[in-house]
Image (cartoon, rainbow, N blue to C red):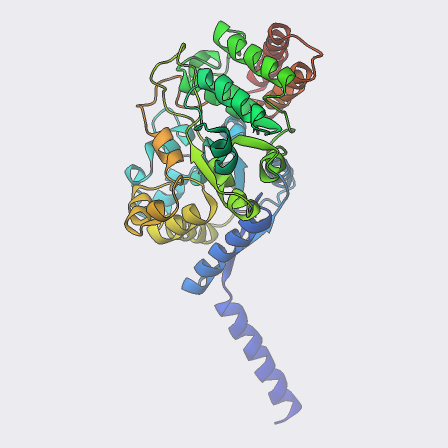
Length: 432
């Protein structure tokens, strides 16, 4: 072959490669470790299922870092197509309507059949606009549950407490039997205030917990919250409750057997299973105060959804819609649910998981679903949607940490939380 012929052949090969190159879809996420590996596996399965699009997942750090990074990238016109945003960032994303491509609109524009009725209402209700349209794609939704060390509870001759009234008796017997602490908690704003409010059907904030408007005030200085935090403070001083840090930093206290019980995300199931080889564990519903609410309401979700950002070509958005359709398939969702402990976001995924015998083989994995659906959601138990929610949770952490350390009284701490949080809410309302 002549040099000219070789050159033409190489050029033809390059052109052919370009013509058939898959359209790339950038997906920024906050799933590290085993969860990050599962995200990569899902993307690989989609990429192998067709040749038109290639989803490229990119780990961007914590939830907060991922959302902040996406906002900065949008301003620099370097935004991804998809970004995973935790539930406390929902109000911020809704306020940035010019930056967001609503999922219901995306699916319609891409000519995709999109039935919102196939998703669990307890999940989708949080991520819809006032007209009931889904703004983002549910992905990893969770709710807090109670994990317990079956060996330690058996040694103390007790069962996991169904109420906070029972926690006192159960906790004291655990300490008497040699346990170093009865229970610890993660994500204290989410578990001990936000879900506390939902289970007891009391408001966390005004304006229907922020769903009805942005002129919102926090309401955690109510007597019910004071009763609860006072009791936790007493248990903290007696050693029955041990604070282990923010977010999920307290998990090692449960892994090691130091604390007999752990209140945290249903999505911690995989981690608990992999890190407790020396004892059997169980899962039960969150305790509630019988005195406040005899029959508890539903708990509320945490986790995150996938938001689509504006600024890309329609052909690329068709790929996003194709991927979302794949992501919502029963097989993918059932596998994700079973591997992680996150809720199945569709009825079909739940039915498939049940038909496969997963709940029978893994007792406790259905608790989160039962707790989320044990009562019809009210305005107080639909969820909490606040502006500057990340900063508000930081305020809750700072002030409650003073209580656990004995440096602040519960009433003063709750009043300070309300005062500081209202400042954040006012700032958000003024700018949106």
